[in-house]
Length: 189
Length: 86
Image (cartoon, rainbow over all chains, first blue to last red):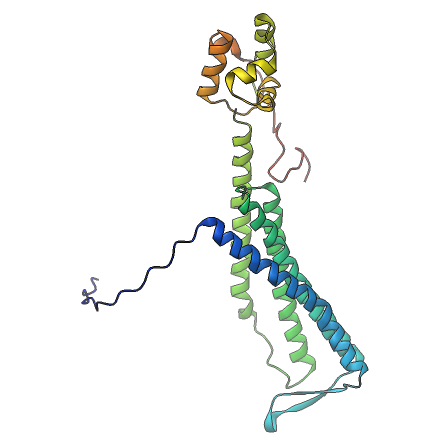
């Protein structure tokens, strides 16, 4: 089916400045480094803060607002579970950025198909899958055992993260082939 | 690899060292060693041309084909593991 041609509105959008590969990788390296340190510090501070609040006498938490608000008691088991979950989430996220820093470093050296990048990408895929699954299980448990705190997640919520994991695994296999070609090229005299 | 590089024999006949040949051909000594020890996977025509010019020989003098089974995965895999390991 042919769509009718529309008249040009005469609007011109400014073209984006051309970014060289070096500048993109510099920005990516800086962003990943900042994210890594923020998540690493958070992985320590957040669990410590949660435990400290409990030690300071914080024994209740309110979920929701207005008439639907419910008051949830916070025994030590919940506090430790929340602290552990926060530590796991933030530290695994920090690990993902640490691995990305390694990949970007090889990119800046002009050697992206380094064999270690294959391992790094597989680790990123595994970390991403574990974080996604962990968050889903955590939400399921909170919805199951703390009535009214939140709705239980559905299995459909895992579809998009699953695609992301599959894409990362495919990219890792592309890098594996690239590493093989790199090796062949090194041994071509 | 069933293709053998007869660099040792020809260097002996021409009384030339590997270092001297590397300087003349414009290939690093490391790469020439890889070629000599049979670990190279491929050779460029430009390199072959330079070797034949400096050694005053034909490509057939340098390269011989040995009939028989190929080496099964003599290189390590892209992850850096030795063959046969996971």
